[in-house]
Amino acid sequence: MSLSTLLQRFAEPETLKMAKLGRELRAKGIDVIDLSLGEPDFDTPEHIKQAAIKAVNDNWSHYTPVPGYLELREAVCTKLKRDNNLDYKPEHIVVSTGAKQSLANTILALVDDDDEVIIPTPYWVTYSELVKIARGKVVEVRSKVEDGFKINAAQLEAAITPKTKAFLFSSPCNPSGAVYSREELAALVEVFKKHPQIFIIADEIYEYINYVGSHQSIAQFDEIKDRVVVINGLSKGYAMTGWRIGYTASVADISKGMEKLQGQFTSATCSIAQRAAITALTADNAPSMEMTKEFARRRQRVMELLKDVPGISCTEPEGAFYVFPDMSSYYGKTDEEGNIIKDSADLCMYILNTAHVSSVMGAAFGEPNCVRFSYANSLENIEKAWARIKEALAKLK
Image (cartoon, rainbow, N blue to C red):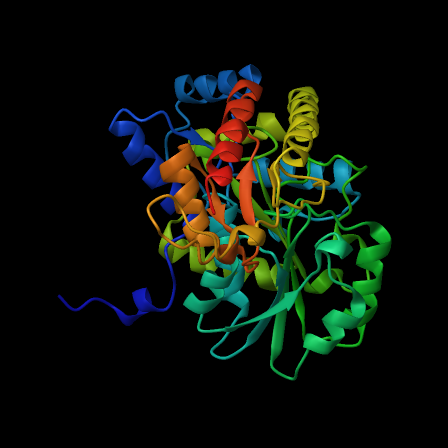
């Protein structure tokens, strides 16, 4: 059967692949602890669920405008002003079926054949593949563990060429948890000011899960704001992953382009989810803040557990809910059946099949020495998982 060559240009997301393998083992009766998926293990707050129920009963069941209900786009603008001191109008906002679609809309609206997109490593697995779908070229800029997995102005400048079209990054970062300060962003902005052809795509989906202070958006810098596309959504900060609400904020020319694309792909996202999102964005943020406090507690415990595992080095994440340890000291070792652990993919499969803990290989994030483990799970499961991992790693010779 001959399928489109488009399918050959990009890979299946490793995060979803590992979650699938874990489910298959669980279906066989094996007790697999999932540390692979990037999903809060909390229920959606009650007031948001009640807003959805009311929307069903009030018959908000018809097609909506492609970029989302006006009231929702106004709520996004209110949130951006309240939390980030950013001024946007409803015509600058496009609501999509999750932040992943928001990213796809952005990249397809901006990137042409052979355009270069600079992406600091490590990065979310989907970034590079979306650029490939758009026929662009990924230019990786390697960050260093000792720099907190953040790049500096000199590294950015060195990566820019006449073909550079966009810079794509996240803060807080999935998978490293790195959070850029205002001063660090300002240094990058000085570079962007010299290159007016470059768009900046800022993925801020983990904004509320920040352990080091208030979130800083690169869109706060007026000199480059017209070239910034802010990506955000409700999945992480509001425990609404399945509701599929993402959004972008950008100048009208870009938002109109994304609306045109979305109108052909999916049209608008679910009407009921949109009505619930209005409540989420305008009501008290206390449930989100409580969730972050619990993640902070787990982060502290995971860092303690990591110190007890030989051969692992890990920076403390400043945001999100992952640890991203360097585990390359185990490469070249052999398991009890004589199989050599060659790389992060082999190590993840070994941990899954031996310790029955799912994780994601660092190579998928552009950082082959590392492995991503989520702590969006109960403390009981986290303790059990790392005990299993430690035992499994000790068996490698």
